[in-house]
Length: 195
Image 1 (cartoon, rainbow, N blue to C red):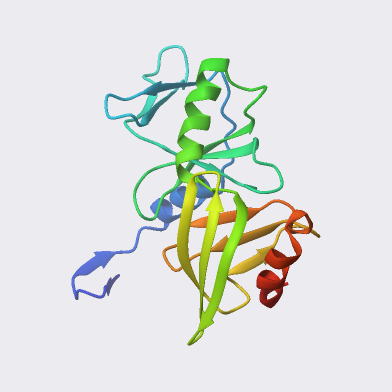
Image 2 (cartoon, rainbow, N blue to C red):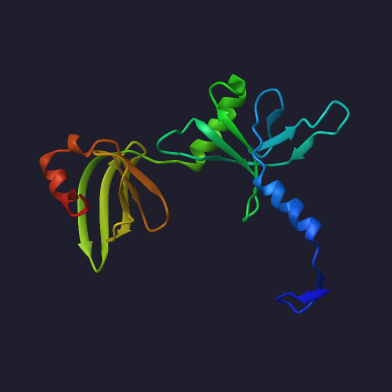
């Protein structure tokens, strides 16, 4: 029995294949120094070899993505190692990057995460102007002076704790204010729209 997919071609429904793919997606595999070897590629990315067994050829990935499962609350635990395609699949999890991999591997993976999670800290707010549903920010950051625009909605400025804020601009860039209570009275007045 076949069915028509969106392009109109006939495909045979394969229940066994679907069950195998579902099982693979639901399987949680922990990676550590005993079963995983990470290496730097010539292009500056990271590759991965996972040992299967003594006689089996290792599972190889030319390039992997390194993703924090809990980037704000637990940035060094439960690190997801994923494939690089748009609908990436999880290859495995590193429970604790400080304990489960070598110092060199940890450094390599942390470099990848720092690129992915580049979040300058706002050290000074020079100005915030509201206009036509947008807020135009002029700030000083740990990466230097910066101007960016955010939507005037609740999802652009998120409270991560009682005093910590995460700001996401129109391009998806993230900025952090670790403790807004340490800002000057003038800066707090400018920020008041978002508190």
